[in-house]
Length: 503
View 1: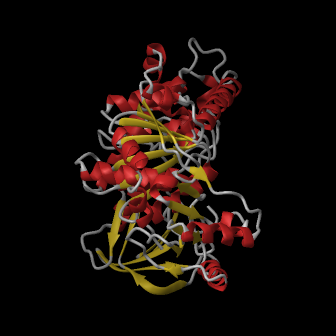
View 2: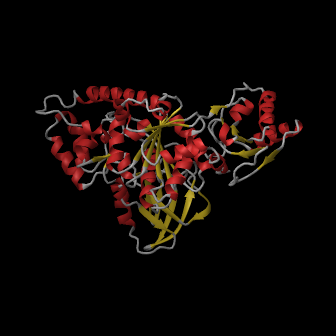
View 3: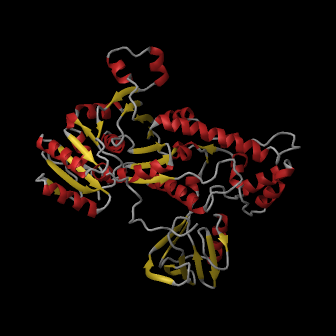
C-alpha cells in the first residue's frame, strides 16, 4: 500500500518547505533517520512540478540500506518508478564474472531510464559500491531480443545467433539464467531477470505462443505470456571491435593469452569483465546514464565516504595481486585504471558536468546551518562544501523497547494534543492489532489503505507501509511510528516477494 499523504503533512512545516526550496541547488541537509525517504519524495515532486527532470539517484552506504530505502520510497512516491541498480558480486579488478541476474537487473534499470518519458518520475537506488563503479559506455544502446506472441517475420537461426552475441549460453536443457536451448521449432530461454524460463514455440516465421516452464520437470506452467524481452547476459559483449582489441592484447601480454584468445574467437571467458577498460573505447559513470539535470542524493555521507575509501583500497589490492603476475614480461603494464572505483568527489563532478544537483542527507548536524544563518560560516569552509547547509529540526521517536503500553501512551498524548499520528507496519495483521490496542485505550484511530491525503489532526492513522524509521516534527505537528518503534521489532524481508530461482 502507499502513503503519499505523509509528504503532504510535512508541507505544514515551514522548516520542511524551506529545505525543499533550498534544494533547488546543491544542499547539505541535516535530517533525522526516518525522514530521508519522505524528504526525497517531496524533492522529486518539487522538481517535477517546477519543470526539472524528476529523476533522482539515491546513493546509500550499503546494499542493506538500499533494500530498506526502496520500499519506503515506493510507499511515499507511488507515481514514480523506484528502481534498484545493484552492485556486482565481484570487485572490478577481480578475475570473476558477475552473475547474469545481477547484470540483467543493472541493464534493465538502464533500459528503463532510457525509455521513460521526460516527465515520468524515476528514483534509482544504488549502494556506494554500485554507484562508484565505472561502466562501459553505450550499454543503453544494445537492443534486446524482443519476441511477441502472434508476431511474424522471425528467423529462429538469426535469433539463436543474436542470443549468442548477447552472451547467452547454449545448452541441451535450460536450468539457469542466461541459458537457452533449441529443439526443432521450440526455443527455451531463461532471461536474466525472470523468475522462470520461457518456452517460445515457432510456427514457421511466426511466434505461435510463449509460456513459462518449470526448471525442475521442464513442463510448461499455466497461462500464456504475451511478450518477452531478452536482455544481454554480460555487460561486456564480444563485438567485432572488442574481439579485435582482445586479439591485439593477446600478443602483448603472454600471461593473459589464454583468456584473450578465447575472447578473440568470440568465446566468453570467466572474469573477462575485469579487462573492460582495456577492451572498450570509453568508460562511463552511472550518472552518464541519467538524463541531464538529474539530482543525486548521498544518504548518510559519513558512512558512505568510509565505505568508498575501503572499496578503493581493496580493489587496488586485487588489481596488484591479480594482474602483476599476469602481465610480467610485457613492455608496458596493462592499463586498467579506468575501472577503478570513482571517488565521491569525482562522481559529484560528473553530476555537475551534466548540470545536475548534489544533495547530502546526514543524520548528524554539523552546526553549519546555524552558523550560516548567523553569518559565521567561514568563506574557506563554504567554498569547500559548495552547498547550502540546511536542517529539518525533527526528532527520533523514543524507543519503547517493545513496551506497547509506552508506545500507546505516547500516541495517546500526541493525539490529545491535536497532532497527526501515523502508525505503519509491513503486514495487515500488525496494523489491525495496533488499531485494536489503541481502541482498547479509547484512542481515536482509523485504518486506511491508500492514503493520498494528509493524515487528520487529533487522530491516529494506521496503514500498511514499509517505512524505515519513525520521527516527529513539531511545527508540522506530525509523528510517524513504524512497527520497529510501536512493537519493538525490526522490519524483515517482505514475505510477499516471490523468491527467485538460483542464478
